[in-house]
Length: 291
Image (cartoon, rainbow, N blue to C red; front, side):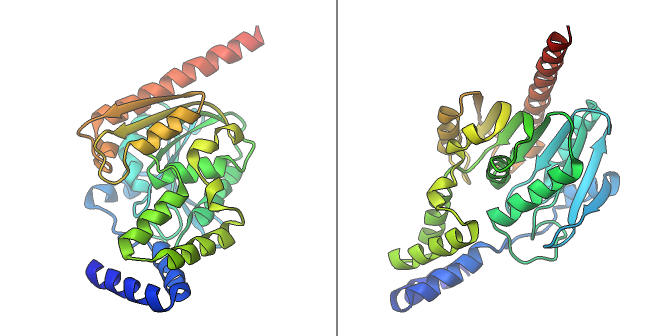
């Protein structure tokens, strides 16, 4: 199938680059594999579900743990769903956290056919506005979900305690360039693809890069976890972010892969410990202010 797609876009790019760019952008927005994995299905039976009204469609949300505990939002990646974060979510619930998960547009059981970072950013912000947290909350995100998290939080004044990025892309321009190379767009068709994206975002693509967003986000600490040999997102993305975010730390692992890391005890333990440490610092800070 990919050979046919590449042949098609190489041909159309040469004779009608604008058409090729527009069609490639439509393809780019479509998650092609929305299947919920068998090991993820049990999550939907144990989590408390609720919906939030949104103009795109009702947002599918799920809740675990103690409603009075420290709030943690879990944000899944591209072509994934809320349950992909369930091993982490269930463990955090055991530790007393109030865990909120949700499906991004066109993911999970969504009826939508396409999604982009703008749509996902809007949904993320709608979830936060609905929850209306009175205290700083934390976010654990995976892959594309980390870019969504950073982009969304840069558009809000909410105070975030701990950010944990389980891999992250960095520059959206690089994502589009990799996609153009993959499907076979020429330079003019690629420019049209980027123009379509900028028209939707209402800002230059160069401005949508995670490593440049730290000064727009109110956060206490960022932990980046990345497999050194990740075949989906090179570790250079997380390293670039780490180098630009002042309150950050990076841990490079091996043999956790890209998706498998979400179910790996080593990674789950690191997430739990990071949030515990954040809770201790927050409580200590509150105590110091009170006395």
